[in-house]
Length: 426
Image: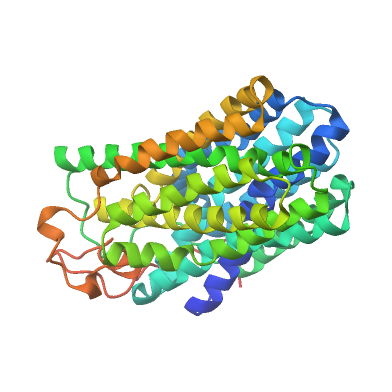
């Protein structure tokens, strides 16, 4: 099989990420007001259901590298896309909390498999000099998927089942795309890469700090992802179509997250982390304070999208930097911690909404965010010996450059891996 260009692979990956993360995972919050009214579920129940895809994401992410190794990048990607089809189809036909929970749980499995499979293929097929660019394009797929969900809620007002049926059809196209365009690669680490060094006590300590910050951010963000449209429609009396503009602004702003996170690594990660976290908490308080003002609500979503995607990008770079040579652990650890934080926060915010109301619940989560922002100087950014590193050795591409090294400790120039084709592959 002939190798595909880096940008073509990036576009394919972005489409698959848009389906798996955008439509199958993050679009759910946009339809919660309609689903709650139709199925008659409480905020507490919705909070528990919203945690299920995050739990399945964490569980599957732990075994995804092994699945990719034994089944190959193509088969794993197809399997992931198939779970998105299954989950979205079940959600479209859900009759109660159990069937809805099964659907979102399947969507979480999809997200847990997709990124490791695409990362495996990228390591094998794409020149290392553009890994940062390719990764940025693929990660932007999440924001694109969120944006794509907006027309469904605007033009299919009150018809959330038809919206999810349309998502199911798009996911079927994703299965076809994965089968025909993703090569069958199983080895994640290049054969000419030096074995990763032993993780030191100092590295474990910095990894723990990264995981705690990522967990806290996910915990705080869970309020917005789960109940922002619900708050806008119930507390602010906005229509379902108007609440759709929140996710449109969120998705568009999220496209700039890669730029902000890259600049953060080139300057002061700790300060940028504090700033972005304060922006995240501002989005919660702004929406809770003025839910009936559609322009302010949309502005809050814009701030949330920019800060959330910037923070996840910053965590990605930090994870890669802290664990050179461990391609299946460095990029995954912070996302697992973030997902665990969201899984812990979603049920809690559901309980608080039921007991205290939307404004009070969002204010509590915002207060937690302020506390975490104040301790951001402890964020594990550049260590003391790294503070003088040249600018061309910072940023996402530099993190990928030093992710794999040769025996002399120099970055690998290319990723040379033999492709293991399936039987019958042309």
